[in-house]
Amino acid sequence: MNETNNINEFLDNSMKSTMLEKTSDDFTAKLMLEIELSKTFQKEDKKTFRALNIFVIGFIGAIVSSAVILIALLGGQTDEENPVTDGFLSTVYTYINGISQKVFGVLGLKLSGDTVLYVMGIGLAIVLYSVVDKFVLKRSYN
Figure 1 (spheres, helix red, strand yellow):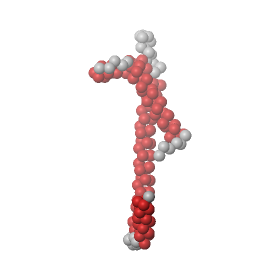
Figure 2: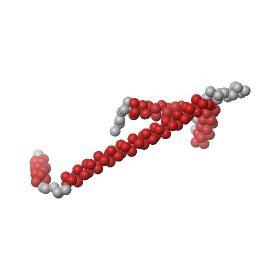
Figure 3: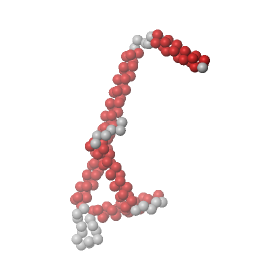
Figure 4: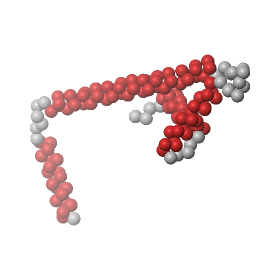
C-alpha cells in the first residue's frame, strides 16, 4: 500500500512540475502546422483513391460495355448452311473452354469452361455490387 502512495505521489509531483514548465515559443505554431499538414494529406489521399476508383470502374465498364455490344452485334448471326454453329456465344464458349483446359492442364487441374464462366460471372456480380454499393447506396467504409 505504501508503494502505491509513493507512485501516486510521484505522478502528482510530475504533473505539477510539468504544468509549471514553459513550452517553446513556436510549439503552438508547429502543432498547428502538423495538424494542417495531416488534414492536407488526408484530403489528397481521398482525391487519389477517388480518381483511382473512377479509373478502375471506367475501365471495367468499358470492357463490359464492349462485350455487350459485341454480343449484341454478333450474337444473333447464325450460319444458315451449318446449323451446328450458334453464333458468337457458342464460339466464345468453345474458345473459353479450350483455353481453360490448356491453362489448367498445365497446372495439373481439370476445370471446364463452365467453371471459368461461373467464376467470371461471380466476379462480375461482385464488381456490380461494389459499384452499386459505392455510388447508389453511397456507403463508405473509411
